[in-house]
Image (cartoon, rainbow, N blue to C red; front, side, top):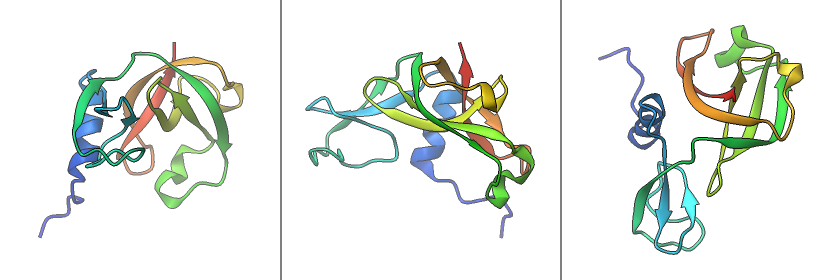
Length: 129
């Protein structure tokens, strides 16, 4: 038996695409956007989803500074999490490249992948443009 964690194919594929600088979202025939892993549109139930290129830049809509983390992020604190509007979808991740207390709504960011300090697992991050 392997010590490797089980691979969540849809989500892991999305993280791979972000790492390869080709992030995408899933779009149904009615123009609704969602993130993988999805098999049907959460808005209308359409099962015909296509991969559509995600915009390069997004805008922080909401953020929070975490001082008391889950065990998975124990060594990363304090850190800022943010909900970022990328047009058709909103994405949640950590803000890197600036002090957590300096993060503000309205900042323009790009999406990337980094590693947690606690367990070196991949994590979705936003870099300030």
